[in-house]
Image (spheres, rainbow, N blue to C red):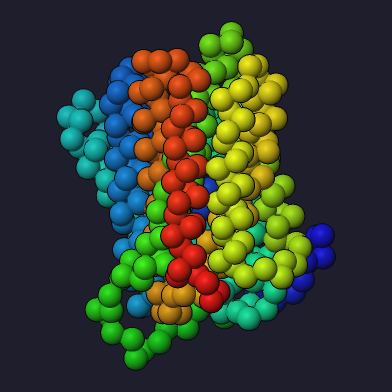
Length: 392
């Protein structure tokens, strides 16, 4: 299986830009919790901490595609350093204001502008695509990046928390800032693999959201994000309800492990089925794996269910990215990848908020209803999407 991944790294320069992108994508996984840990220690207000973190996430969902749009027009080397410096500057301002008696709006403003952090996941996929277009290794490259995304969210949050608790409250966010500048800097230095800019393309071309297939995939990723956000909240509530709060991390790790395994296996095997049909099968599997959540009775059964459910997350994401490569013009790829990432992140926030409200009012099990509804939305979306992806 690993031979497939060794093969893609035979492409000159690929290991260098993929490694740099991994460093550069770590800050996005660290920042949300880093903000909460820092502000809760200084202000003692989880409501304010959570709001500032939410503003950063929502701002990133809006600004990351705009940064990617500029990248598609002007190139990674010209835009990424500017975006990274602006984001890092406002993050450092947030670190400074956290210790000062400043009004909440100042913290919120810093978080909003810090959200222009580049989507390194979109940037690295935009490099793999022209290098491997038309070759079976492209799916393996998308799979690899999906797995590395999972790894960043496995490593990032504990790293941010550990640094802030062990050293000083700002340590987690400060580390994220340094990693962002280092990763982006190393990434843009890899000039020979940077995608070429089509000078004939107008800077005022319409957004890829004007393409029906892209809108469909955005809704799909939004629905999948709701499932993930629900799982995050309900797993913690379920474990606490059973007097085993510490075991929540095991449950969440099981979901991430399932996605990790599913992504690696899916990227390594050859499937002679059209992408549109693969998306349909993935949607059906996503819905079916949410059903057992209603029947879990203990932490062990929940962890097993999460493991199985996670297996289909990364493959669905890989198919979605492969479809984007088929239906979007090359000069809009980075922006399209960023919009899908934004849809996923907004979905995670929505799932956490809605399921948290249900759990508070009706108990942990009620939160699983949100995951089931989102699974149903996934299935409906892929069914509708067959009209757009039938030729892919």
